[in-house]
Amino acid sequence: MQDFPQSIMEYICTSLMDERSMGFFLIDAGGKVLRSGGMLSDFAISPPRPEDDITDILLFMKGLLPLEQSPLKLSQIRIHPGVTVDAHLFQTAEGYGLILLDAVHQEKLVARFQQKANELVLLREKHTRILEHNFGKGFAEQLLELDPHTNAVKKPATILLVSIRGVSELAEHYEPLQIFSTLREYVSTMIQSVHVEGGIVKDTFGNTIMAVFGLLPSALPPAHQSLNAVHKIFKKIADLNTNRSEHRLNALEVGMGVASCEVMAGIKSREERHSLMVVGPCFEMADRLEKLTRPGQVIVDRSTFELSGELKKCFAPVRVRLGVNTDFSLAFAWEGSND
Image 1 (tube, helix red, strand yellow):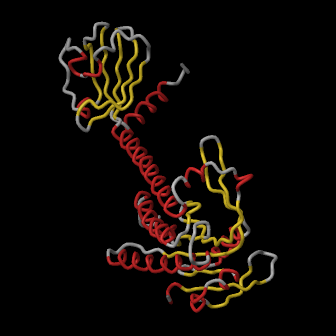
Image 2 (tube, rainbow, N blue to C red; image 1 turned 120 degrees about the horizontal axis):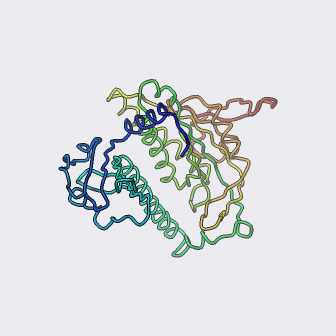
Image 3 (cartoon, rainbow, N blue to C red; image 1 turned 90 degrees about the vertical axis):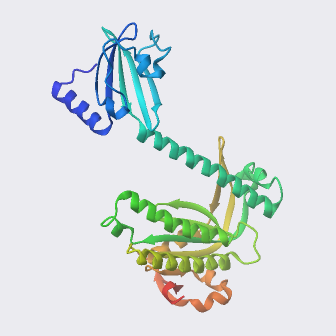
């Protein structure tokens, strides 16, 4: 072991015990308790009497002694209702040492990961049902087997990029967990609107989602689908903000960029993982347009506007500069507050 100074070792031990409750037992070779200490009361363990057997105190110790391999680390052992520990068992000059570390927080994290994994499985099953409803039984499996080099398709599509505004201001009033919960509420609202209109959420990153319209069958052009989703997002965000204002909570707005073009779509495979691959110039266009929007505004390119049908009446022409050294281009803006 490294020759750490005593002051360093004291700091390490103090920091560890500040983060997690700790208790210990010194045990002889036969399993009798020689000494104990630490925060055993945090583990619902009464102070042992001299010569108590460790197996009478901790049932999981039955059959572990004599120790064949040292050290032995056991994770997330439930020793009492609501009490979970990590146990470290090792040989000492007297016999054995046993350290207990509180693991309730780690157990909750694992439970959350398992829950998320279950949710992903359910989501995949839901998407499979949707695909098979539209394309027939077995289509989802066929989709996973596609080779993007030989089965990529060219399709007209519309890209919608939505960004939540005002997130930085939340940090001045809320704790990180509250900020995460707020973002999840807004992002879920936006994703639901995309799915209702037949869009596929390609990416979510932080406070932004990117959706593709035109890959699933629809009686409407992709541009019209995307703008129907924009209309729903504006309405749902307004309803959400009204509800939050009534509870004296900060309200957020969104900015959206929309662009249409032909894209190449296929399945990208890597080992056992498959992901949707869509490429086209309108991704960058949608991103640039979104960055030019004010909160509560959507800006679309000319192609999207021309395909927007009766929704054209919602837009006003605007001139935008899409790059530092570029000329002004014609685009079209929709103010959500006027919806």
